Image (cartoon, rainbow, N blue to C red; front, side, top):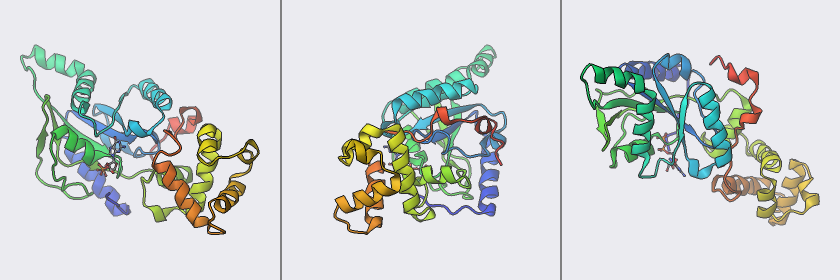
Length: 291
Ligand code: GDP
């Protein structure tokens, strides 16, 4: 797990590096987390990549709520962006992503073929926030364990291409960009999934958010995991914390309960979930200006 502290200097360096590398690729693959299809996006990506063709890859689908991911696929579609859901650890990823990239680049490939250029490999780069699965995906695409030494912002080398067993080549240096952590709700969601360092957000806040979220969106999973009665389900998040800390025999050591709850959620003990909901989108989110 790469933990990066983002400072303005890092951000502009990372941004410059992505912009430099963009020149060498036909299409950008933007990796997002299926539990956070919006919160795990970099707020400035649109500006950074300009009109470069793009494919959104919704990764870690094995951890997320499929119904909600499907809604996100439609959401991206409504924005004119093709999105595919994957598990970076799975074998069939190369075929799936090559096919999707060909779909996005269909017109360009058609023109190339009219000019007699056939089967030219598509060149791409993977971009995403830390821990979204870039290295895992690149290893899977290359079909072997590769040392992704450029997996830190600001580390550049000459362009090297990872070959896949399809007509797809990947720049060996992924673009690492920052999440939109200045938004408190986004910070809570990133923290709950483990996308950002654990000490950035207090665990009591993460736990209150988590209990409220599961009570509203996945009540039966919450009820079953902690054997809660209907009455207990109607308690506030804070009262639930007090109750469950006692139930577990942790006395008043609330931190122990926070850790248990957060770990349970990350380990999928409360089922598959997606924290970002298309239904929560506001007009403001949709015209996110990237600032
Ligand atoms: P990077 O920082 O973007 O390069 O992220 P990594 O490739 O290091 O992945 C971060 C963590 O997510 C690792 O523990 C991976 O094993 C895990 N991971 C990556 N892709 C998937 C996926 O599709 N499903 C699951 N369950 N875990 C994944």
